[in-house]
Length: 249
Image 1: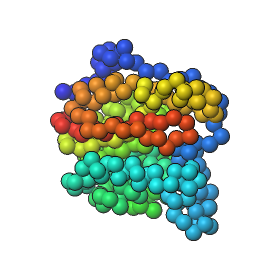
Image 2: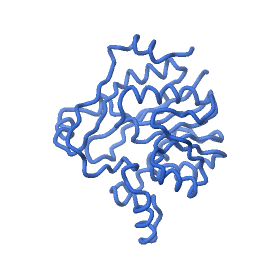
Image 3: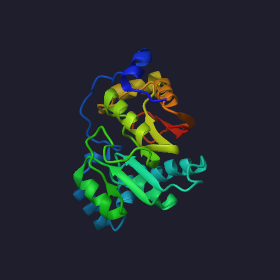
Image 4: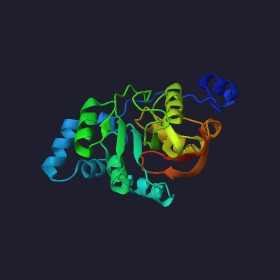
């Protein structure tokens, strides 16, 4: 059954999510690669004689974090069947793309990265396809063409309606049997202590999404929830990873 944004919002209006009011401008975003200069980062990694991925994870104090996330997907059996096409939203420095490519060797890896310098470097470094990224759609990708759609640290800092646009696009491009994995800041991520820590921090995120809202959207769109787990690699708090599989078109 097809589902439109308007009909879904009407059904789920009680679950409508609003972002927390912006706080102070952050000095560092460890999990927002697009805020790091591609040229400076690549140059620094080269001078240290290490890969960009290793340099970035060291810089952000997140050594082996990307490997931990991708290995979690592997344990779920996501790579048991051949993954021929992958689409990543917000590929950034490519730290997750590198691990996914190593594990499943897809025939095509599509990347939607809004930072043009990073997008160009990703295409050269990993032989992936850097699509035109407008920050809200996956227009260059065909319907029902992707085995795995992945987004790390993306839906935690963009507005609700933009997230919904991405969700609709994800539904459109994912094959039957394909997987979708991303993290959000849900109600489970904000106990009193964590909320106080966010308020006292220098970050202007998080943007909150009600988990049941997201689960119901994907359920009505033909997906089943495969797994959920916390991602604790943040300066403040943690996000919730949701992994879905498309069971019908």
